[in-house]
Length: 305
Image 1 (cartoon, rainbow, N blue to C red):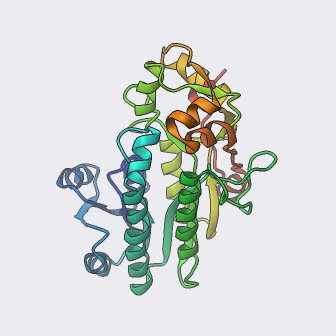
Image 2 (cartoon, rainbow, N blue to C red; image 1 turned 90 degrees about the vertical axis):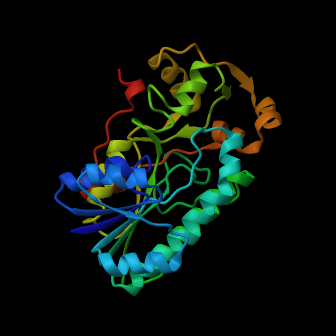
């Protein structure tokens, strides 16, 4: 299958291109930087220098490539994962996902692309009992930043399924960990914060996190080229509260025990979004993906045993 990957030099784009090439697909990856193009060629893929905010350029490339499938992994996230950095990056990230992704989607429809796979969210579900299934509501009434992200993801999914001629698959990924992610054991932004005792457990740490190893997310994305269209949670088997996973992660990387702070202090310093993550996140269920294509993510590495 000829596959165009937008965002091919990002955290998931790199392992995804590798997995697609190994699976025998003809891969064309889009990047905004010359270094990204060289990296794609080194992986055995074709590289295309592309600004997805240029609608005409996107249309020209899709018309030239004529892919069977497009995988939209477009983001514009900061190098550091902090409340301040995420807030500052949000407008550009939203523009890339909505305007850039919109250009890509319109080109897919115009040039008869058969399948469109897009990145969505598996960690912003509305409150409820137990891990959330795909048919449950997202957290539209959450803290301002979270609600804004939910609005963006909702628009992406609504756009995806707006054309009946396109086979749409929305992958609701959990929090990435593994190489080149914020939770990279050696160089991740969150890893550094935990080592510096700057990532606290916000009491009582009840926010439930669904993680996914970046290579498992890539493998699921390759599978998404063949599975029935729809929405799938791509998360690990055991959603875990902050109060459990964060101390275990600190131990795993040889960091000191994380400090513990009151939620009022976190709101005062970092705003309500940080408190929402720590206290109100809801984990997601991967049962649908298991039924559909035998999804089998690895256990969260710092909780094994």
